Amino acid sequence: MTKKNINNLLKISGALLLFILLLLTILNIEKDAEGSSIKTLFDAFWYSIVTLTTVGYGDSYPITKAGKIVSLILILFSLGVLSYVIGQISSKIQAYMEKKKLGFFGTDFENHVILVGWNNFGKLIADEIIRANQKMAIITDNRDDVDIINELYAENVFVNFGELHSIESLEKTNIKQSVSLFINLSDDSKALVYLINMRKNYNHVSVVVYLSNAELKETFYTAGATYVIPEKDISSKLIASFVFEPDVAKYTEDLITTSFAKDSCDMVEFKVGEKNPLLGTNCLDAFVSLKKDHNAILLGISKKTNSGYSLIKNPGDEVMIDKGDYLILVVDGNTKKEIAKLFEIKEGRMLRTGSAE
Image (cartoon, rainbow, N blue to C red):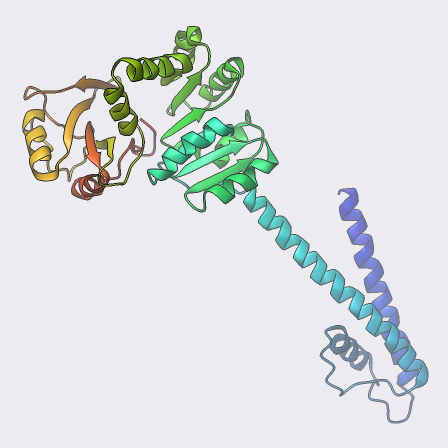
């Protein structure tokens, strides 16, 4: 038993003892008084309860001066007890709400993205994911970040305040039902250690790592990363494109940014399910059908294989669309909603029978 529990037990025991002494004192004073309504221990108990709860029915009350003095003590005692009880209840409610706010009770999110580490770059990533109407769980070791994140995103976001390297924190994000995990740690060495430790417990999760040092790319792949994105590789290619082919760069920037406006384009991927109308057709026919009927462009297909997925760019009529494949499309804001309704599935990588692909 902790010291706090012992102190609480002593307080409760002392309060009960004082309460019993007051009952016996009032009963001893009032029972023989003429016209008194407190004749038995039950009468004294009943009077104390209606006094303690501030109900005061008036059917039992002291009539002697000594009884009224003791009753005054009882009234003050009842106010103290009532204040203590209300304070304890309020404290418990506040503690519960604080723990819930900090993510201590976990989440039941499914098909969501997990972001480990919060900073300005992480915010940019979260903005795009939330804009795509995707649920997200964020782990941060900074208490102030929790308030910031909750103010930024009213829904579809779960925040856990805890140790970044803690398995308990990952469990609270419901990692087993997640789509992917993005390691957003500023230090590459810390990110590598995190990846290695995480892979010991969760082999099925798709892990994305953003690196400062491109030379560590193969090391991270060896350690179990699904996708490794070197910072300089991405920025240098986009900058070179702006220099040499600025219109291509603008179009590329538009494609990789989540958009809902009619005049904005977005590159998305949809999993082929049993209800997909393109199931069993070849990619050329699908290309024509999507462009003609829905103004969507089929750019590629990620074919499901025994070892994972194989990306085929600009597929032709020799490539058939099978269940479990992913179709990569260029759409605008209105078309995206139309395609999602047609395919009866949400865009992005989805879970398969309870595990991430």
